[in-house]
Picture 1 (cartoon, rainbow, N blue to C red):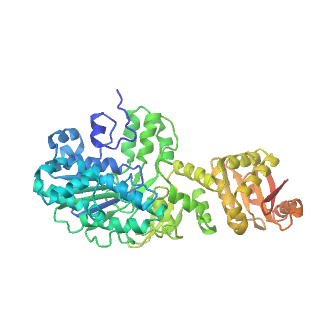
Picture 2: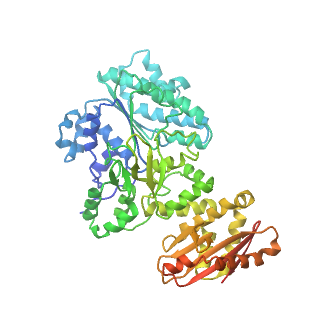
Picture 3: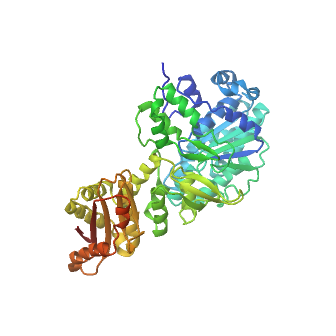
Length: 545
């Protein structure tokens, strides 16, 4: 009998007790213990197993219920190791910040207050051991009545209480530490959030005499803003580092075994195409969320996309300039691009030109192809990891900039030589995209080309502004199957609407005179349609030959 797939189950105890299918990551415990860094921050994309791994650490180390918890690790890798002697030896605090997504700072504080209340409720048994000084303060946390200063120092206070109870140093686990900071950035209270969390995290992690070890997870490293500026005992392990490559996400052997366990190993090549391609350190990694969903449903689909908010990605796609467009264009053509990736970005500048690629990389929308230059240099070759991410960008870009329905209908009209339909929906796209047409004509056309690429990339190669014949064409749409029809598009902008038809015909004449079709013909495409498109404000005229 096959085990069930616990989609979205992030509590390690529940996974084991409910006999859910589990890919053993308990060797991470030994690696954590060998690593003598006091505070460790692991940055990985969302849905790559961070919370489940942190829950595993909680159940392994926690001195509370240690005998019951020990049973959870029966038959797993860590049980066979020397590190099993550390099981149940420490008081543990586990707090996840992923739920803090408030629209205002006032709401955020209330959500944090409730989160702290829930955290302290796990330790109500401490009440009987507290003295007259600590008891009232503990009750305030427990009742949700802690003032702002007390709230900032909640984690430090709790570590002290646990140390006094057990006479053992505390292990502090902070999951998704950056989630409230991303929400703060989105809703414009970032400076307030940074000031709070610098104390909330910092007091508990820096020179805390009651602390054995701190482990944190997140997506990005927020460092320049000062949240960790005073934390000199922090070691960050990002996807750029060679350490810990296989503990977040699934490696090739794990995926092959999983497919065999579910009798679908024959689909391995398709699974690789859709969900493999991430590179953490020197290891190739599959998206674990997508693999588990595939095991459950048995069908290839983009499972990972839109599993959480994509505010930052939407901002990037809404605010692209021509240079970013060109880089994205290369990526969607299957090319690699070289960018500087330091791993030290902060949210105050993530939408700047140089740091967009860092956000896309650390969020899981790009991956490393190879390191460029010496180890101390920060230049990497980047690419799209797999088809799932490509599908995400196609849908997301079109949704953000044009509207999927109009775009699909326009391109169907073009492919089927129904140019009246193509013109109709191209017109609607223009009406919806006035910001592009008003002041950024060139950027608009780049966006239009890129959008075409998203919709057509399964069956066509789409290229823009490349040399062919006696000049540079605007757009070439080349069929992957050379027996199908290709298209060459030339765009013109006019000031007088009365000249639209004349100029669209002139665009076709330019294609013919400049022999833009030479490249397509040389590559075996026999049937080529020339398309001239003239624009005036928000009006378009399409001619073809």
